[in-house]
Amino acid sequence: MPPPRFDAVILGAGAAGLFCAAQAGQRGLRVLLIDHSERVAEKVRVSGGGRANFTNRDLDPAAPHKHFISANPHFCRSALARFTPQHFIALLDRHGVPWHEKHKGQLFCDRSAEDLIALLLAECAAATAHGGLVERWQPCRVQSVRFQAKEAASADAASAGSYLIDSDRGPIEAPALVIATGGLSIPKIGASSLGLDIARQFGLKIIDTRPGLVPLTFDGAAWAPYAQLAGLALPVRIGTGEKKQHVTFHEDLLFTHRGLSGPAVLQISSYWRPGTPIVIDLAPEVDVAAELLAAKARSRKLIVNELAQWLPQRLAEAWVAQDAAWQRPVNEASDKALLQLAEQLQRWPLTPTGTEGYKKAEVTLGGVDTRALSSQTLEARQQPGLYFIGEVVDVTGWLGGYNFQWAWASAAACAEALAARHTGTPATP
Image (cartoon, rainbow, N blue to C red; front, top):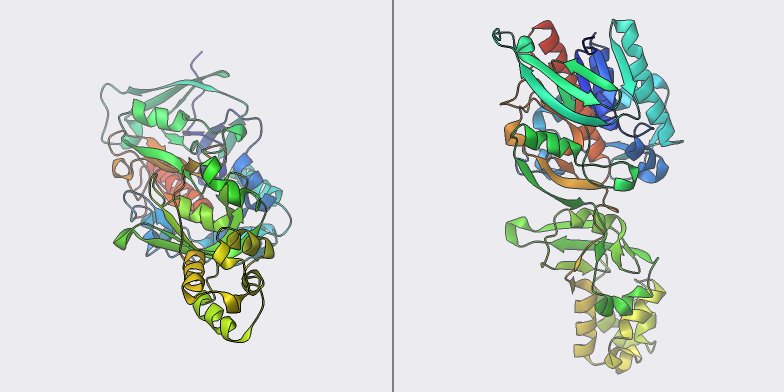
């Protein structure tokens, strides 16, 4: 018996894979979606505190370098311009999924990420009404992938050959294979290297991968004075890098037993490089030096109590404990001591020893080199019918819904290309 044949096989039933399957199915294609996990979209399910931060209104498709990291930061512009946050918002509205904006353009489901997952599954089911099909094999592991070229390929790219996929549910054949397997982050919910392995198999270059949007860790002994602050959060300004590479964020910071987390640190972690420092302003809305010198002229309070006006009490206490010159009434302190205190609070230099790794990282930096892909279609330039979408590609967004928008946009661009390939018509530029 010949293996079952589909118009396209998609590996990975996460955000990008599900959306691509739905979009392709609704364009009349017969699509098989394969995932080794029992449940779909586990990363969607756990994101945004269980409410899925599904996009960001502030995304500027004309300037993706503002919110995305890539060796080729303009690669994602085409897909992001063609499928915008407004397109995805309209889809939620059409399905009656309530949502709200938290801050800085971040959009969340009102009730639960399950609403978003149900939407994606409903969109897949809708394929039958358009003459298409989305079939899912879960759990199903892929054992091997190979390409079988036709002996006399015609000018029609769709007839250049087929992908033969061996799985633990049997073999499958398709002229198009879409890799939507995600990155290496959060292995406990199913992350694997399958997509990167397939890219390497077909000769695509991989930009070195590393954990992104991840907590930073510090040497145990050096961190001991701050470990007691675990659980404490406050707004900060945080920066790293030199000159043109300097990046800053104004977000909340969270102390942990092993180091620092919270949105500020997750954001900066994607730009931080091992061995380099980060610099934190613990009171970004205050000129601490001016305030302390003014307090010296009118107050007899302890320095720690003055600091507690702008910092959490526990942090103020931990800070002044580092120097006897700060453990006295403000009017008895020298100007030098007060200025040193202000400088350390507003330019606190720290060199992390590492990160919490992929187990705690929200995304994977690096991935399939975009120079090997078409920005219009996400198809591999040297391998007909092979596509890469979502996190497996070297496109990584900021915290705040940007990575999900890349998943939707790259999936939509790929689905349009699959349909054009299937019908033999050019894809929309």
